[in-house]
Amino acid sequence: MTKTPHPGVFVLPKLNYNIYVRVKNKKGFSIAEVIIVLAVMAIMVSGILPIFLNVMVANVSSKNFSNAYKIADSKIEEYRNTPFLDIESEEFDIPELADADGHGSLTVTEEVDGAPVEGIKKIDLTISWNYKRERDIRIVTYITEGGIGR
Image (cartoon, rainbow, N blue to C red; front, side, top):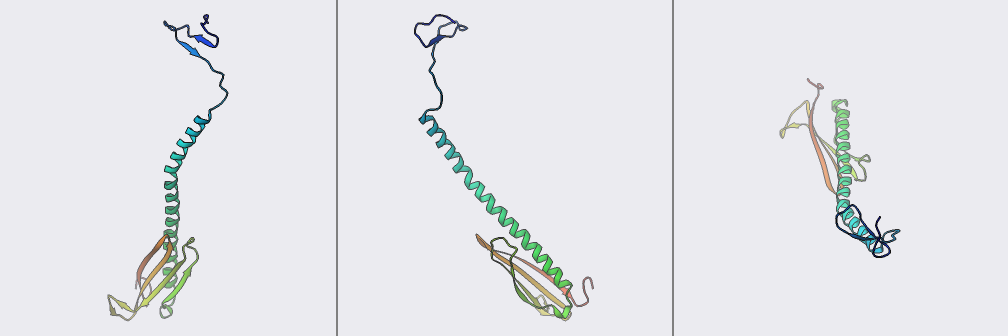
């Protein structure tokens, strides 16, 4: 290093011109720097947080739809394996739907397209729940007295 004009100032020797750099004895961040970093981080988090919350709601909603379809499928299969004369309408609760106050209704009618038909029952299954808003699925199928495929 070359001799400097003032104490605490160093000359950078590899440059063709003299630049004086004052070296301070720093051991940490100033309060202003910390406040600026915290403000920038708060702005970033406030932008990401709503997205994260929406993804969580969508995840629960998707889980409820999936569970509702599984329950509906099992109910339909249950009625397909029930003797034809024992198939009747019913209302039921569904505790499997997460925090959603789930309930279902199964309506059995002996008609096709509004006209009464012997030997065929129309099964109209609706599963409803309330998570952020009222939601439901509906499945309609027919069961014959002779069984599946007859």
